[in-house]
Image 1 (cartoon, rainbow, N blue to C red):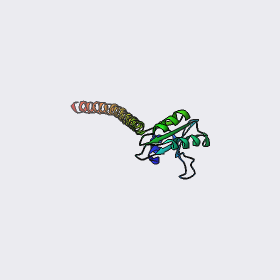
Image 2 (cartoon, rainbow, N blue to C red):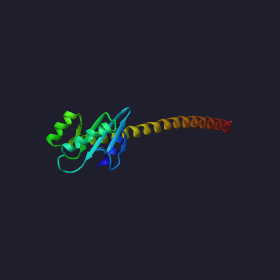
Image 3 (cartoon, rainbow, N blue to C red):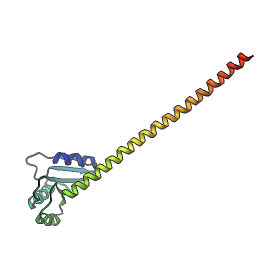
Image 4 (cartoon, helix red, strand yellow):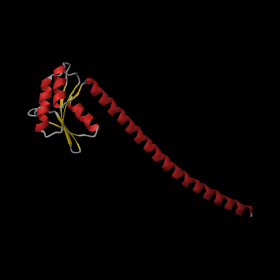
Length: 155
């Protein structure tokens, strides 16, 4: 899950660093965006995530000198975890939030891809228009030359 989140947040424009697998103080990712630093704990699985994850990331926030702390899961959170997160100002992203972010990023990437393709088509059209003008000039010059030759033959 950590690698997938790394890719997702990189697509969102964050500089993303993975923490070591041991001794990470509860943070799995460190996100940077300008001067802002966010520590993220990624929790996979089917069981609801409890208060321990909130305590760990809250501690990691200070240890990594981050401005925000997030816990992201492909599951849900217990009520006690939600209450602790609210009191400690830890942002929680459950399965539904995660799916929404993925859909938004996918949509954004699709828009960027289409805009890039449109730009390339417009660029190609401009080159074709320029080439068309060149060919029309060449055609006109050839027609004039043909006309001159035909006049010489008639005389």
